Image (cartoon, rainbow, N blue to C red):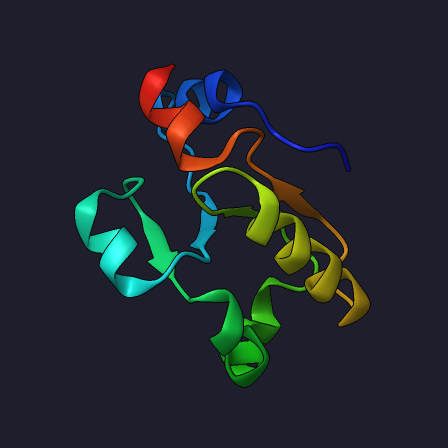
Length: 99
């Protein structure tokens, strides 16, 4: 599955879709601003949270960070763990805020 653009994400949010969004930034970054409905799991804590995310393995999961680097790592990690539909937010939270 290809990555997702900020415009597509906003369009789907406005349509009222229920989305699985994971913010892999640090808690202090999340406190400065967040995407509505996102769950904050810092990249370093992701391996310890796999049990909580198990039910999402076959659902679409959108990951984001500030610019796209950490979330690319999160996408690769989750794919290795058997997640079948992980999408990275292109440009991260910075691009989302500007779109």
